[in-house]
Image (tube, rainbow, N blue to C red; front, side):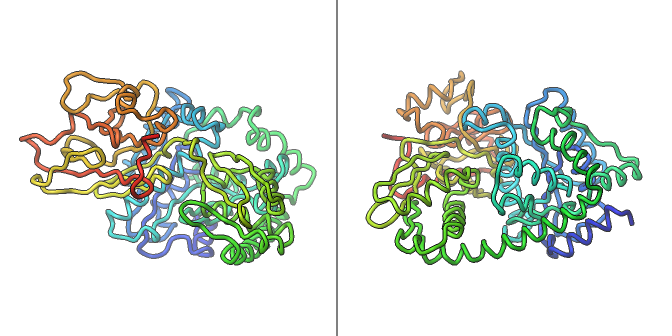
Length: 473
């Protein structure tokens, strides 16, 4: 047993990361850390899940290099007899549309695709989704680098605790191992890995912390890793305690109704400022997951607003906070609609798109062919499952049902009188680069049910808000 395997096995045991008979989906980029995670899983170090598979996300950022990473991961998984899926997604376009930096955009896309793929894998294995786990290859080096980066830019204890071993369904079996343990393990196996050249670009903060800042600290304080391990554990334990207290206050002092998060101002003002801040932030993230990326100043403004009768402020991610009749309410602004977060839709499958509603797929008898704006039937074998679901992209074209030529998706939305500000919330279903269905608007001709169809699948868009039409003014 290698040092890395011992560390990973103990981490998995200590945190109960992989319950018996659960489904595990590993995120593998091709870098040393994720390749080590994959090899350890193949050796049984992660336990005995009922199903194990791999997801690789090609961010389309580095051209041929990214394509080579994808090919490497798929070939390695094939050699190990492990099922793998690769999804390509244009991170640059998503970042520009959502006003994010590339790192944040890539993280959102990876986790969004991982969550939906894990749901699909759980359904295929007959396991409840809560028994699924997404395994990532973050190491203790990543924890240190994240701590130092957040220390430099400013963060509270929740941020300074750095990367948690377990968060929701995400588990990190290598979180107690150093990068040196990873490379020693792979070298001993004779296992190559891929290097991302951007990791050496010290104009990026994380690379600067890794290559310039951390070595200086370790030369000055050789025991830094040991002391930081203890410090991070203490921060995490104390943060967990405060989070439990804030959750209790949130349960009593805040309420979500019809998509609006409301705080009782008089009750909230009985809290100390630190606890009010935690209560606001915790309730916000529960109600609007995208709020996890709000900055400190936004939370502070909301806490200040609890004592202000006329408080009103627009927040990032299309949120708005304002006081009304003894409450401070936070909701999504009607005039701001972001993009559909990308996800994978299996068959059968159900994909929650948040503010854009739900997309569902199920097999149906050929006699049950449906046709309508929000429910369509396609030839099951005319596409490769799972389908990618996201928003319209520049240059998208579709061969509309009943037509011989193609048409721009943007023109279809114009014809359907979908306001430009709402188009990002129209789900677009794709088979690779091919548009299969613009939900609520038009199905593609080449996936329709014909006399030769052997199996049929029904796609349904459950729009957000009963009785509402999000595609109209």
